[in-house]
Image 1 (cartoon, one colour):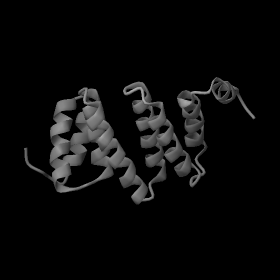
Image 2: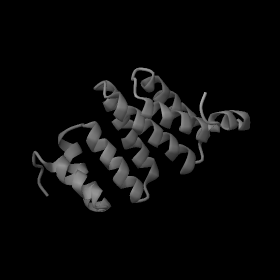
Image 3: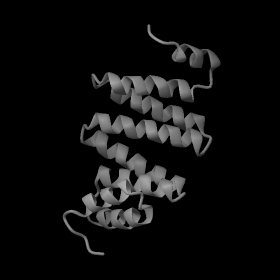
Image 4: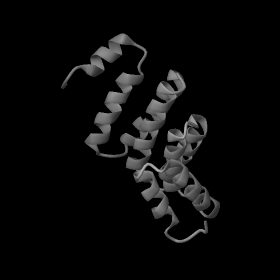
Length: 142
């Protein structure tokens, strides 16, 4: 498999088709030639589906850093929330999950995206270890 200008697109297509091992191989080639948040995000997805949660998180964390560096805050928020879910659900690490929620919160504050604010609100309730906070966050409206 040789690197081409459209290798990232081919890898993203493999991801959409659920061809995890193929996507992993394609993304490894992409990452050997360029350090892009899209490639790290894709690699994180492929590795998660292949059962390699820790390596998946490493790539997702790099995707987050890349999106933040490029001021692509919406993508950074989505990745931070995804990482938070992974830390809580896959590694039973609520402290790490809440740390990623805090990162998402800081990024959301810099946007006016109500959709992302809603996802953040939901995830704050999901990762909270305080029943009263969970109850408050689960209530509709102001």
